[in-house]
Length: 425
Ligand SMILES: Cc1ncc(COP(=O)(O)O)c(C=O)c1O
Image (tube, rainbow, N blue to C red; front, side, top):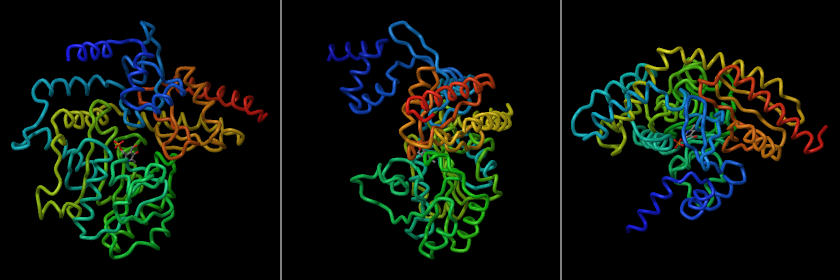
């Protein structure tokens, strides 16, 4: 065992990216390691601050500008000092709950989310997929119905239940469909109207399809779904794992349409980019299953004090620092600038809300040359999981206007290079 512990320490202290790549290859995921290398990401992350990510290889430090924000989760800047200090304070007092006594931080975090959403109850868990699982389970049990309506191209997570309501087959290969789910086109209200019936427990929908390629639905989509669900006494589940907590310039994207879901699903930015946490927020109808059995749904680590402190101070930070206004203004500025890159040759469309922007390429094959140029120029981005043709721009809100200009400039160069490379001129 001594040798093993010694080698583990050597790995832990290593600043050699090739050595760590080899460990990834041998002990984490061989093909993923190859992909990371191919994409030019085989560097060692050493620290993060605001919108900056630093890597270190054998003493050499490099600085990157993060336009990915952990797939939308880091909105308030990496290592947000205020939230980190509050979580540290809490962790020195108590890391884990007993789950037998009451907790004031649990109560305060739940209170804040109910006041922000206009809903009644909150169940805290640890991730987006876990929150989706719980939401579906609640809907099925509380309505005593089984059918779920979801949308093609949606992304709700990769655990078995969340995957069953996700609308992309590539992640479901070889996995049985566990739930009774009917998929319809996103943004098409009539398609939902055609399949909804008295057996439908819930309609689950993202207010903007994030991993689907930053797809914004028609303005009347959510209001019409709300009315339709009311007519059939079906629960409307709005998945705001990616859009929620200010990413789009409003605390919850669905509130732009003046509607209230029966269940709201949150994660990602909910923990301020400091702690992993998810939440299911619901009304009395949705919580019926808990009336029958208070232990209907539980989680050992869910609602731990550290994550709830992160939730509590994330909300305080957002509203005490004008974050929503800044996200809106910077997002608008970014979007307008990016729209100038739309040339029909390489860039087909640019769309988004707040700091959740998608750049749709005319062809998937252009993505590699654009990503390669950007990473060489120290800008981190990625494509949306269900739609590799769409480059996502989801930086922390701490990004400056100068940095936005720089990203647009570099993207412009990347597009020119792509035009040259593919002889599109
Ligand atoms: C809308 C939506 N729902 C659910 C999830 C799953 O969240 P997690 O990765 O935390 O399980 C994601 C992740 O990207 C998401 O975008």
